[in-house]
Image (cartoon, rainbow, N blue to C red; front, side):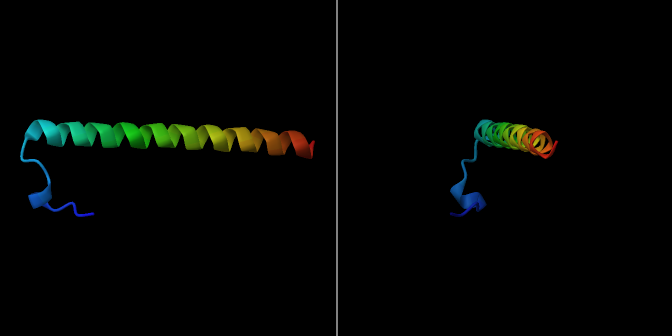
Length: 49
């Protein structure tokens, strides 16, 4: 998969939409990972008591 300039739309609107979607996806993934990590940490603490 190429991210070369010749394969991307020249429209600034499309570029902005792509950046926004990418940022939103990263935030969403980070939140899910953090929640799972917190849950696992809490479970470990409960089991070790």
